[in-house]
Length: 192
Image 1 (cartoon, rainbow, N blue to C red):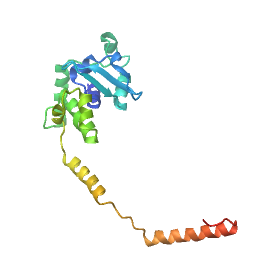
Image 2 (tube, rainbow, N blue to C red; image 1 turned 90 degrees about the horizontal axis):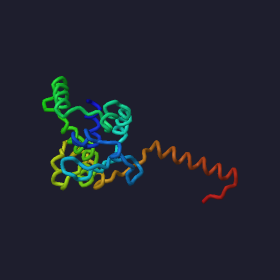
Image 3 (cartoon, one colour; image 1 turned 30 degrees about the vertical axis):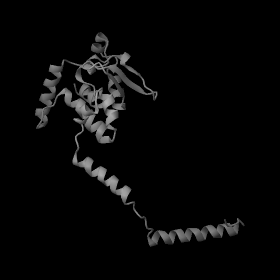
Image 4 (cartoon, one colour; image 1 turned 180 degrees about the vertical axis):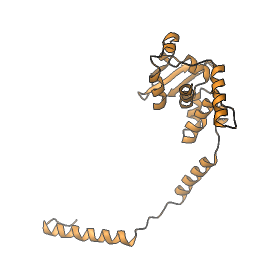
């Protein structure tokens, strides 16, 4: 259960797409790495998702799982109802003040994993198989940490730091230059 949820967090796949994911849907992408290239059940749009290492690790773990072999899928996904029951129980045990469900994994990929790590929204749109950026914008949770990070970067661009050498570092540099001159004299190396 945990692995399926985590896999969805790292791929953005909807429950039904994770449930139906087959080995034939895992292909080499344009960069030579493994990608999910499959049709989304809900929209018939193509999902193009480069696989992150954690997602590949989960796929490897279940490659010989009896349920996967029986169904011809890459993950042993339970029914959506059963998964959501387990996730609800986990949320209760952890004291989460929100409902935990399979769709939250997809939203986590769209917000925390990608957008919060500066993946452009148009790229996230493609990976999620959305038909418009407008759909993807609902995943864009602007957190205070994100605002702070972006403003810090902007401030650094607008006000580059002036690095001043300490007196101690300046003394070391002068000593090294003097030693270098002595070595050049000793070995008769012309100064440049």
